[in-house]
Image 1 (tube, rainbow, N blue to C red):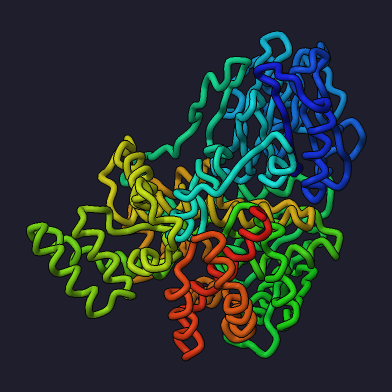
Image 2: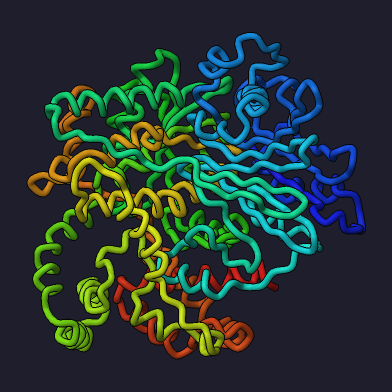
Length: 635
């Protein structure tokens, strides 16, 4: 787990200083991603420079230093991530090669010499890497299947630049940018920024499961190398499928325990994290560190007793932290230093403290249960939407004018209801389920936006984001008919997992130089889970049904079937005064300077929160976050 940077002078423009010096400057913007070593390499012809910040996980010696050159000096690589099948690839394809290290980096470098752009499809792991081919004067970039490792790029003023984080790009004088209003509009809808957007003009986010080839003429290829593969699972028995799920998850956990440094797990005591810990214990008799947090005098948000119970069952070295109000307030004032790309997700708060705790205990690698709820339909909201569908189908059969009239009438009655959003979408012949739309409801967002969005041509529509995923979903070559639950799992994986859960895990883990691994997001398990018929995912009102049945041999029914609590924080109880005081103090100047928000609408929402309407907490948190984020990155 590391940070990568690079500059490719495609037009050979005259620069104020050496490429290597500028890449070193980029490295210095992201030292947290790799505190163990730093490297900068510039090509002999000064066409390109690559940078690297190393977090040493495999082969801790200096032989793992990057950027790494091939023996013949033709190829240079800067790599971020972990490849779990690199020993097998090394044995299968490179048995005659001489190696100088025991790193996955060197294996990728030698594989690229033999297989070129086919390499990403051979790798099982998380990765973003760049390879420079000196003979072809060609740069290759790629990002892993699920987007676990970040990658951003821009092509400005004759220079192609890329990095693991936007802040490294912003450190360069040659990079000019302003707010991307369309991306910001989508952020307000989804509480995250969908790829390929960023909120910075001319800076784009690399799509997951993609590779890119760049030469002096610019981007030559930008292609997808993998999509989930749907198989026919209807002919086998339920017990056989349970066994496949268990075996796949067990293999994924075993693979992710590959490390030359101590590892542990984040443990909530819920199904997914408990399953990971149970399988870690099956794999190893050595000490396993687990980490959980609670909130002082806030039992509604506390899962410590459940986590402690699981720790006792599997004999882990358990660590707990009780977060207090001052801890929370201290963190939220600095959150935008971490998130150069905005993410309005209060779950970031516990993950920050978990990562901080792991670092304090000397743990560099942790495993989590991220991704299971999306691919196995584990949310209660999925069950709720499943119940809506039959009513929505009846509504959808009505003539369009009647649907619009009905949606409008319901909006007068209760425009803040999720049901209104669904009716409104159906009246416009849109897909009714927008997985990951956790932000402002459409009617509120339209009122919230300020004068900056009154300009001609700024008629943005966040359904365009949903349509992109729906178009891909409709083109899936599946051996059975896919339905609304399949759609929720697909969009949950493609969007919520990548641009929210993996993004926050990367930033918050790497802030503390912690590598976070997600066994449920092994690509074999993803394809298997998405292929499972819907009636085996949600059955008799039970979400994640088949996964829970598959885990019964290692987890008790008490763990598997207790009510899901979720990773929540006492933001309203502890921080509402801080949020409202900050907004009230700075609102006029912020709105006058940026034109992003309408002052009256924000003040109306503040009044409702102060009057005890707690459902406005997330809206006010988002406004607070945006004001601080904009002041940090655009002033």
